[in-house]
Length: 580
Ligand SMILES: Cc1cc2nc3c(=O)[nH]c(=O)nc-3n(C[C@H](O)[C@H](O)[C@H](O)COP(=O)(O)OP(=O)(O)OC[C@H]3O[C@@H](n4cnc5c(N)ncnc54)[C@H](O)[C@@H]3O)c2cc1C
Image (tube, rainbow, N blue to C red):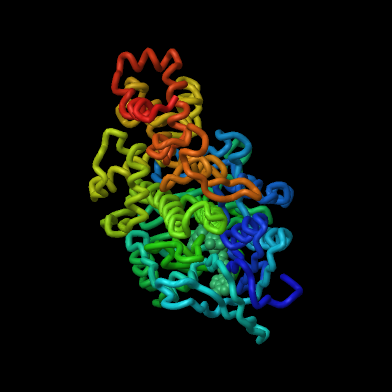
């Protein structure tokens, strides 16, 4: 991409030009650092990961790429439809309810990733595609010392070495730091899944003529062995994929076909469509499979014991990945990129020690990952796909920390037990299973919102807890189901706000996500609302800010007086922390 040759020295080296690497490189260059990015593939290159979450828009806006994205013509994604139980209407996650800023896109990744990489080059990053990092040299033992240089090569036979002060590893699933040097990647057994997918023309769009049009369609297989996606793309094709546990996939592939032979990958893929009445309906008579478009991936759920070390950060898929369900990959990649940029800035400026900057980054990535892990496990429970014990898959320091943060939202502030037990894990999955309650659809949400108010039925509303919801709903079954669904969404409080990480303290520090001034601030030196109390509500910061206001609503105050347990937890914390 760059016409010059790779320099022999750079201030910051980024490995990988996917969304994580390009975004981190843009941010750091815009902060005035000198950044070089080496990408192994020739761009544009194919990639899976076509459905994006709402915070994408805010991330793009922050680096000045939203308008170009908007103009490119990607399909605007108003939400996502989930049919996880046959015989019942699908549920719909309505992105548009949060306003136009929450509308996202379905993208062709070769185009999106190319735009992000070119944008990094426009910011001044020295970008070299078709240039692979082959090895990294360290001051001493790679497990405990600082990386100082990298050897690179191209397919045309060029090679060299580049020295650097800082390293950002965004090498995707290859994860050069994690797999080759730190050797700290752990596969997650419970989500040891296999995906197989392909591309189609002539497939009908989901819910044409309604607000839901163009939403990706997610559907459980009727044999309860997995789930599928159907994502419409702006070139008129549709990406259709199937995900199932490796054991189920092996068993299905072992069955001989009518000719007494094992099915090819495409035959195996086509056979799964028989278990997908909704997808078949979308394919209809006009849908045509594009020959040769079948692809597959396996072993994509993993995490690591840490995502940083002295003068390096690991981000995106190089760090961890949960599962394609819920389309969180690119979002977590950009969250990690932002965390890497601001912790490097904070460390260089001396705002925090490098050790604290590393711990902040590890925690940030651990929490982001764990949030989606529980949503996905909740969905898998709903689809009856979760029959293996998972506690051993979610251990580790980052997860304990994340669990500590979600605890107030999920179990209420009265729950003082910090221990993550199998029972608690199941309870958390139960909470997230409600996100996919097939009895809740957009009409139910609208009518419940009309009855109780948009400031109650919102992911940014105060945490009510199960008792609080029962108290407010007073036997209104729909009301209770919708409010319980929104309780689960509250764990995403900060993730619903674009670049919301600036709102919430971690380890006593909050992110400063401001152009030219990125870094970390001591939490108590910032806005008064960012207090120790807000730290308790890390998963739903707005809870604390809005709670008093909502309790003052006459309808709810009346209910509160009859159901004193509505005060449970939240008010106590506000008082003890002196919040307004
Ligand atoms: C089946 C499936 C479906 C998915 N669906 C979705 C979805 O709908 N929505 C979503 O958000 N996410 C989805 N994902 C996840 C998403 O694809 C990833 O999370 C996302 O691409 C991560 O971005 P990244 O920049 O970390 O890695 P990548 O996009 O993989 O980029 C890493 C880059 O590093 C380069 N690289 C690797 N090694 C080297 C090296 N040694 N030297 C130089 N460069 C190197 C690679 O060539 C690559 O371009 C899905 C994943 C799977 C498996």
